[in-house]
Image (cartoon, rainbow, N blue to C red):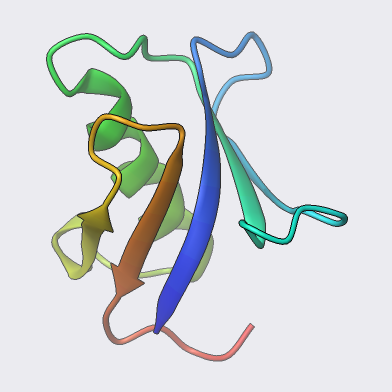
Length: 81
């Protein structure tokens, strides 16, 4: 399954994934405490998405947007949500 996410790096909310209404470009917002330095936020995004869908972090791949807030992510072996 491929999803679009808007990333909030350096968030004080901690690690959190929520559905996003009103944004035609993204269907989810992912909050991660990691800053966007040396790929730390991307690793945090993969971890949070994996936890949300109950899959291993290795099953989550960022397809597009490695250096952007808007990302296209593939989740393999995800159950229905």
